[in-house]
Image 1 (spheres, rainbow, N blue to C red):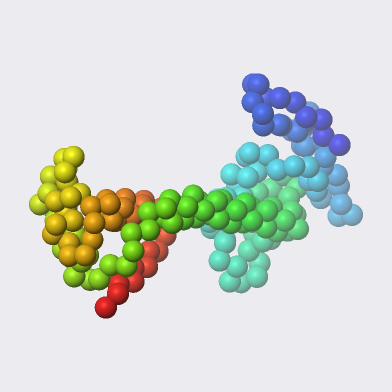
Image 2: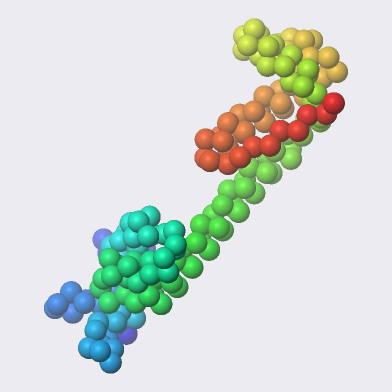
Length: 177
């Protein structure tokens, strides 16, 4: 079993290595090949990411073997598969958390339904009304049926949408007729 040490006071842990630089958790399989049973190192994970980018389409069926070979250090196809599964689950959790962080403010900024004409009037009013303390009341005068508060919330939603689009999300807009 590997011993763990703190590296430069960081909370990340580094498995101990023997004189050949092989993880202490490594063993030899029946074919006298190195098998690494230890936790993944930062270097191995970086190699994994590069191999995932290179072979990640899984079109031929031999990608995991190719990835294991590129990572080296005794990593097997099973190791790569398990690491990929954990990594993808971690990405999925991060995306879910990101969506929650965006959806909560979006719910608080509910500004009601907007027609296409209201949206166009709003965008035009935004372009001609300079930022000022009375901006939203002036914008609202140009948008039939909308209050200053609804116009302000609409603007805040647009800012959220821009951030979402910038991060690669697809935004769906539905207008009432």
